Length: 131
Image 1: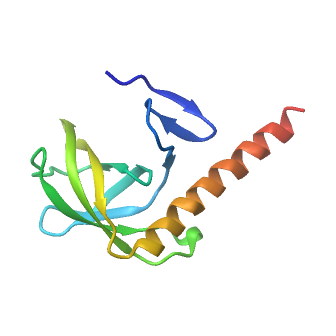
Image 2: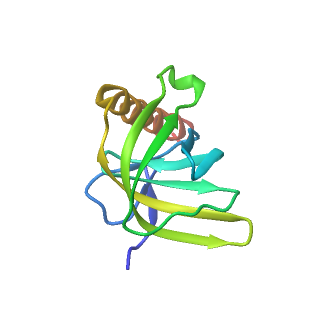
């Protein structure tokens, strides 16, 4: 079982890589529409949340289309992912994915770098106000 805690603006679950909070839109063509959000992202995994039903099977590969928030000034990119866990209830669902491949690797890495920078900038702002 994972333990959760917040550290420097990113979610930690005893992971090798930091996961950064994001507001990017995502879709899985034919499975999940654009009303879904990428909740967090790292170089090895991500979590999405949808307000609609998602017919996603565990341990299955999908093509995830990511549309970063406009403030990032980074173009859309795709990730090849594998579903690891699915949590659904009522009118929403969350899915955890392992990232297997990024056909547009530079855009993906730039987005992770942007999220890391944004997270550290927010941390610095909080530190400055507590001094």
